[in-house]
Length: 304
Ligand code: NDP
Image (cartoon, rainbow, N blue to C red; front, top):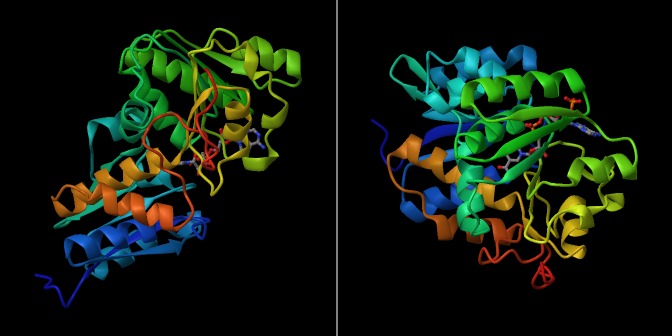
């Protein structure tokens, strides 16, 4: 059994991983709790993912986090899937338990917790617009649909992928979900945004997205605008939404809660949230008091 002098390994497997703040956040949590683990980020090509998992097990690692593009492959690699991972078909947390690989997905529950505790907002009854249909969008769509939202629209650049996700969520959760083509101009964006009161940006488009030009003002005043992506100073998508006066929820909150749940799964101990928040703040990420303040510390997000 590992003693304090012999920490067990945890790794983030993805490609790329250099941008990730999970090592900073998790290692701060291990130090604060005195638990004997060390967390590294490892870039792994898709074709070598199974080998990387086997190598970690050989080294006696406790588990791994998994990010793009390996989340579907991780679900196939696990011997057992937690219900939310099975429903989403994707895994972001592996736990090595004896000879078995257990697969979890903490992304969806983390987003829901972020909405509740980071934005003090109820999901029930919301009309959700989800931008993107990749691994994170999938997990978020399933988790959100199970919490009583009224309806959901999925808009994805590759329409068939969005249609497949919409069908999957509608069948699994019994919520009306429609797929929508990726808008090509401002008036198509206005048609898409109108009538939704929770907008979730779940693409990896980053600064390449059309965010600055979107007609946010067609959203109802009580709408919440959320981004899964995070960046020091806020993402272009959320900065534009905050300028238009809407409440925003930055991806930092989901990062915090998905990491906290992974920490608990590996260690059996509740994660030290304040320590993890401080570690993210030290890396330049903004985690306010959950009052919908604009990213970048620019004060309250207007009257909306
Ligand atoms: P994937 O690679 O699985 O999916 C990427 C998605 O982005 C697809 O829907 C893709 O569309 C879309 N996309 C990529 N480029 C563009 C573009 N230029 N214009 C429009 N759409 C585009 O990534 P993930 O789902 O894993 O991650 C998505 C985002 O969520 C990332 O920013 C990631 O950092 C963030 N994330 C944040 C987490 C957190 O804890 N805060 C946790 C997990 C993810 P298409 O199908 O057409 O290729």
